[in-house]
Image (cartoon, rainbow, N blue to C red):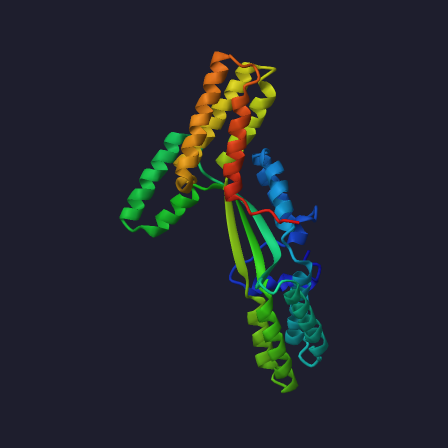
Amino acid sequence: MFKQKFIVHLVTLLTFSFPLAQALANSNSPIKQQSEKNFGYLPSLKDHHQSIDESLKQKINANALELYNKTEEALYKLSREPEKDISPLLEEALKMAESVSATDRTQQNFAIDYRIEISNYAPNDLKAIKLLRRDLNKAYYNENFPEVRTIMAAMESELHMQLFSIPVTEYRNVLKETLGLLKDQNKSLAESKLRILNGHFTVQDWSVPLPLIEAEMAILDAQTLKSINLEKAQEKINLADHQLDRADALGYVVGEKEAFKRLKKQLKTVKDEIRSRKNIDFPSIDRFRHELLSMIKKFSPPTVKK
């Protein structure tokens, strides 16, 4: 993705910057190296990362991406080589915009890139989280908002995803206007129009709580261990219980309280079943994992229907 070298100038056009999807595919990329470093800290994330990466990748519209790159190329040439005629480039971009718009008249924004990041600063210890919550409430009450932001950052434990889209209809309209400005030799205004256009994005955000992912991985291990080493399986189930409590303490399930209560109740059933050893297959583990995955899915990007 982002095969055109001109895309690197995007960082200077926006008040925020984002890693290029192409860079993530580059083994020498510092972005990828940093990602691998983060995933090394939580190895269980790799499978989830691959799944989410594929889900977001499917949302990218190749023609919209080409439209963005072509417009960026025109802007680059107009700003660096103003004596050259960029009208042919803009006409190509306009045709692309019309083509993309024609694929779905009901859709205004088409995805061109995405970012996946890990923020895992929250303590593992529940007592430490309780102290952070106390300090957060105190800072908020005193309107010490810089401290509020610092404490909230220290309570993050999530897989954060962003999907960047461009307004193709707006691209089409601005490209037409820019071509008219170039015919009138108003290159300065044409450049301003293109610069504003290429800095205009719609951003969709999702955050999956890492404690839920870690709970799911612990339960997956318990499923494997239940017929091999029951004590180890119990340890994994206790770990899953702890991670659910972390998710709750960090405020990630505040909008899913009822579902979370059901989840905790199901986990108690799992513990009771293993303790009693009445059913060596322990079907409650499978049911619990299914419900947990359903909750994780609520936080994740919707899948693309084919």
